[in-house]
Image 1 (cartoon, rainbow, N blue to C red):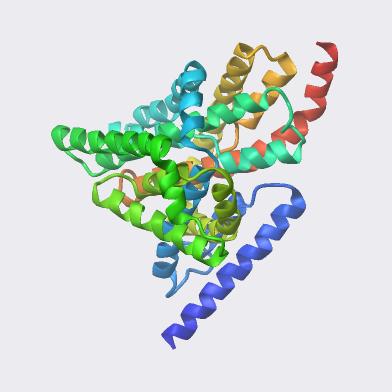
Image 2 (cartoon, one colour):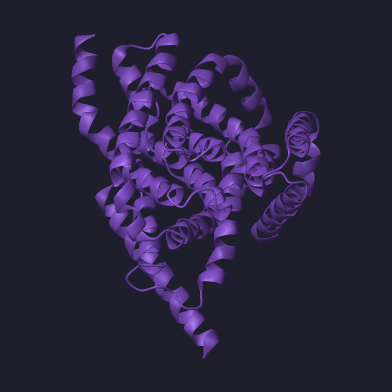
Length: 385
């Protein structure tokens, strides 16, 4: 009976997510807000709480984080990361300061303490690479002059996250100054070693993983990612960082082939991940923080607009391109929920999860919508300049 109920619940959840995804495609929006809402509906305090499948979904959510970061790493190679870090350091630092500050300041003003401030800084900092890429594609902005600037900022953010997540993990664990420094040192050493190894010996990894058979290639890539993620977690480095570094180590045609095979798995488990975060959040807890989430979202929109305009202006791009760059950076999604999920699991503050959920709901939905709404205005600006 238990197995039957488990299958019924999982089937209903996955089918429901498929329907929501179809609705999102028809409306031209990201499905992430709908997945979060689905989790809220089936979690504690929701309309129909799940009885038996939450543990299974939890495991799927962990796989979702790993798949998200693995495929994200496959988008880049070590050379691109190093080049981006050198060429866009100033814009990346402006992005970090302007967009991490709102979350950190809000947590401190609310009296949540420094640990929550570190977590909230990450929640408000990172742009959703997936949603932004879709916006650029859907609106035909891929070939624009500002697009490389946007992509370079996303690369900088991803690399920053690879360093930030281990720091956050140590802070959330309540590590002492010495043990926390050791954890961060291990994380920095791990990232550095993997990047150097990928630059010099990436071919060896690719030869080991490569296979003309798609099934074998998929098993090798996923197996290697899970293995490295597990080792990273044992070293108190984020498992997500381990998966991200595996993706970076693979490049060229191999990375493209692996990405094509992994995308369906990534989308499946990523949807489960967003649902699981919603399951952990009581919908009744969102209403008291909705106003704060809206204010934080408004501030974040402004800081991302300033970030995009600054970086694009440094690249010699006109005002219309500066506006497009800032708008493309507005959406939040994957990393923000990953960070909030870690903080919620550590019991940092009961309002952090609901605030993060409402914040991501607003920006994941409004970011693409804002890009569509201001497109005529941007076109008018371009004609005048």
